[in-house]
Amino acid sequence: MARRPTVYDVAKLAGVSTATVSFAFRRPDEVRDSTREAVLQAARELGYVPSGAARGLARGGTGVLGLQSFDLLTESDLLSPPAAIPVDDGPPDPRVFPLYVDEVQRGFELECRQRGRSVHISNDPRTPQDVTDHAGRVDGLAVFPSRAGLSGVADVLESVVRTVPIVLFSMGGVSADDAFHRVQADNDGGARAVIAHLVDHHRARRLTFLGDLAAPDYQERFIAITDELATRGLAPLAAASTAAVNDATAADDATATQHAPDIAAIIADISVTNLPDAFVCASDQIAIALIEQLTRRGVSVPADVIVTGFDGILASRVLRPTLTTVRQPMADMGRTAARILAEEAENRSETGRTVILPTTLVLGESCGCGSGSTELG
Image (cartoon, rainbow, N blue to C red; front, side, top):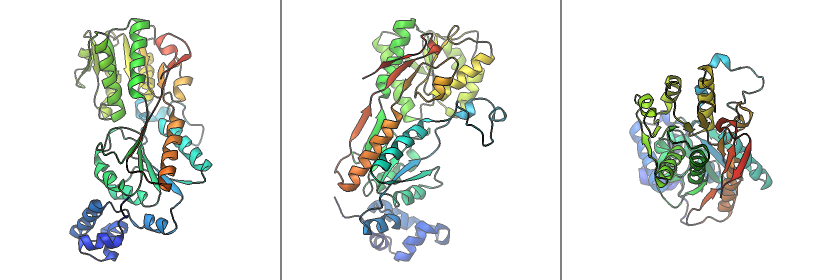
């Protein structure tokens, strides 16, 4: 591997002092905009990460692995109004906790503990430089997908990966640079299994997909569903606009919503007099919100309409009716990511590796099958 760039390299390329480079990262408000931009541009070109990494390298590594998220991946605002959810220090609402990120994080931390490594967690960075700073404190970084994708920080990740190994818990959001490692569940197989069950066992034909197609994982599930329906000679999922969702669900095909901030409103506006055979939701949280809203409006799940989710969070099992969903091996995903980073910290590979873990179709009451599970390869 190439030598890691230093603060001296950045200072030389930007034409400034090493002290100015340090201030550009640590105290940006005290550096002129043009100077700061010159430093950051030089850092991006070189793949430089700031002094935390340098101090760690002097000791032979920090002994720390990092987890980075850009939002909590929670869609809890789709559930009951805030006033209906306790905000004190009592037990958390099982409908919104633990989340996908919580279970992945648990696996990550367990693997790190087993390997004698510490974990540094950062979420909701204010600037791309916050991500760079985080990378500078660790020997490797695992990155959660964002509902809005990773486009806002793609440049900094593509720069940092040249010096710090990075694992992405999603295939999308950054370039196809083979320097990235990737760990995720089998979105394609899980989504296809849901459709096979709905079509073959329940004879469902009119399907509506609910999910934000800007999220890479949701988009993968949507594409797999569309392809599976086409393979079976059924109408493919059509991308419907927010305003057209009610009309589209009346058609003899499947529909999709595309804008996350509008999903709550879409759920509230669903016509209960013209329901599809099944709602296929991109996540358990969306499915839970949908079932809650339908129940309030006198619609019975699954007697009047089937609802399915994706993730297999705890809430899907305590919900009534229990949710038919695709269970991701979230703890295993966290462990796998930590294992890759620990190995890469010891001996950096020239190219990244991709690990896709199998999912499990969990049959619940929301499709009328009761409880049980079917393993997916």
